[in-house]
Amino acid sequence: MNATANWTPVDPLGEALHFLRLSGTFYTRSEFSAPWGLALPPLADCLMFHVVNAGRAWLDVDGHERVLLRPGDLALVPHGLGHTLASEPDGAADALFDLPREAVSERYDILRHGGGGAPTHMVCGAVRFDHPAARQLVALLPKAIVIEAAHTLHDDWIGHTLRLMAAEARELRPGGETIITRLSDILVIQAIRAWIERDPAARTGWLGALKDRQIGRALTLIHRDPAHAWTLASLASQVAMSRSAFAARFAELVGVPAMQYVARWRMQLAATTLKESGAALADVAARLGYQSEAAFSRAFKRCVGVSPGAVRRGTVP
Image 1: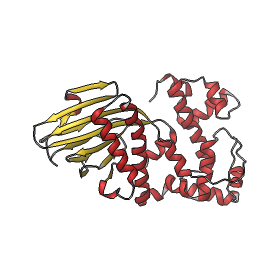
Image 2: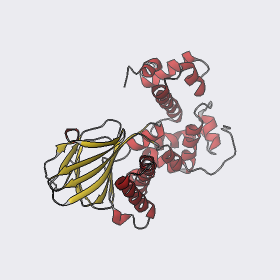
Image 3: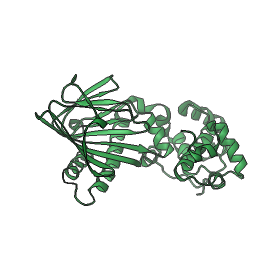
């Protein structure tokens, strides 16, 4: 990539959302009958979502945020916090992994639970995000995001996605699991985008910086081409700012100096690559623009606190 290409329109926030590719997905089609209650344990590094197809469910996240979900509503629990779903706000909840489930595939099962009363049908999922940009975005989200069906009437994408997921979950025809996975990509991105559009908290920090015309472009350049030999002067030049003005605005909006962000971004990418593929250190170093494995290892340990070899071997979280 030519990092010094002419100015072209970019959508930094859109590119960050592009990195929200789900992995490690697991889905459950839940068929409840009142009275019922389900306690979901904390799942580290996971985002969990719940879609109500019929009936209703009370969601209580970490004992602090309680909301009634109705048909068509979507709830995200972004940080893997323990939470409960129940037919009544103070109803008893049985531990998820103590209940029998019908395994449809390695990543999909059916749960039937309750006392035989009024039915509630849901699709629930647990997903992971591996790309550093996705993790950085998800880390900024609140404990829970609820998108009510009544608030999505102006945007048929969410409603259509929910209906397609519900249909596939009911029938699970050949290829249904793959379709649900792809629809979940869309669903989660749409929900996060809706939160970004309506919540004042999304206008500050890293998300706010992405929306800034010049700092957002600088972040995009760093994200697109981490191996480039970025300097404060070169980044400032790319976004038509003076070096001092760029340095001050970047630090104010992003929260860290520009060159510290560049180094941190490279090491986040390196850690993800080492964990996922176990790639040779020399290959990772070259991919990120380091002239030697030794220089890369020193930079990695200085930023992350452990050696890249330890991350590759899986001896550290």
